[in-house]
Image (cartoon, rainbow, N blue to C red):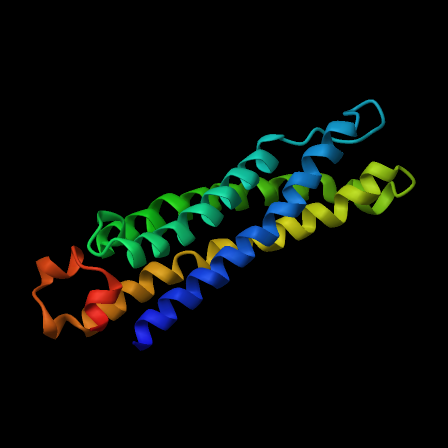
Length: 178
């Protein structure tokens, strides 16, 4: 029972932070589209970070609740397997957030000299706080996304006495907890 509550609450926390990171990235798409490059002394910023941030947030916001919902509705479905949750969260989503973080930090580093000097251009004045917010949220996501699969693995190994190692990977958190 304890692990199931931890499982659901961690999904809610990760999904909420991913949803919060969606806003600055969507605003950055609009703001960076309005900025003129090099003509006004504004450095060129790679435009892939904002779109990758949106994709990472959407994938996180939709896949985590879907995995929990499927586990409640269809017992024993393959998306509930510990191996699938570990692979999806530990490799795929974490890879997206690592790439998002690297590109966002690079874009923030590129714009940071301009942020302090040019505050009379409205788009720059709005872009700088949003890019730093996106940078902070992507770093947070890059840290907490792998904590969930690590927790699942630790829980699985502590409950391993109930089942064999091979069957553990193809069971859900709900089955291990019972």
